[in-house]
Image (cartoon, rainbow, N blue to C red; front, side, top):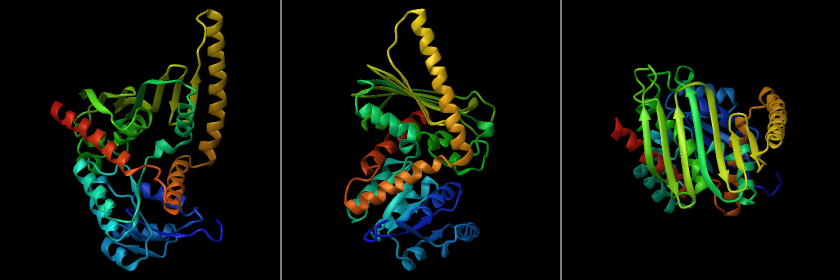
Length: 353
């Protein structure tokens, strides 16, 4: 950090699981000082302030806004509280970093957008996978037209409900969301598909069913087909899989990208011949690449917090947008459209029962 670069006072509201990732990242950023944390559960607020050596803690959000000189507020609470917290902070001219999703309804999202228009502050939303190494590399290849014109995108997001911390806990807040556990998961594939196919995605077809035996999960299988002027996209979410998989296949006219978001691997599948020799050579090449990527990622998972990379990117880019007066990493328009897409799908899920 240069001598002339401003240091921003930052506070967080919400001291749950995701807040620990944010605070671990924030404590390493030179141009940020975390001045306070807030949670309605005072014990959580006290424990978090002690763990991360933060001077002030609050259980009253208004009191924190009144007492602290805050430049940036990180909203890390369940989505049902985002609109209220965001609107109040914007009235105070405070810049916002909001954990995904912006909100769960377009009505709530509109209230934030309207407050933002009346404020001098900026806002962004944390889209973890969008700013991961694998997605940034893939988006760069697409921008440089390395894979040609994008024809189709397929996103797969599968878990096993018994091992999923949210799905397996019948008292978790996700079950109260519009769309339940799917409502919490859907923003991820929605914003990835937006980044590849554009914001004007519309839902064309939805298939939903229940295959597992956890009684409080109304549905546990979801397949959605979406469309934009750039092409078709589809997403598959399952809570019945034998292991967790998060992948995105991008089909272009020149190449196919196979993106593994768990292992942060990008496979580029280029054109090949149809002879047995070509097929064998291609298989050997892919096996070598997979071995190399696996060894590299094993090191990263052993010695680094890989999820921190994305969160750090979002904060760094957002602070840069404040300082330079440029667009934030996730614009309010993109964030609103994510909410719209998720709301569309959740409404269809409700209709299908």
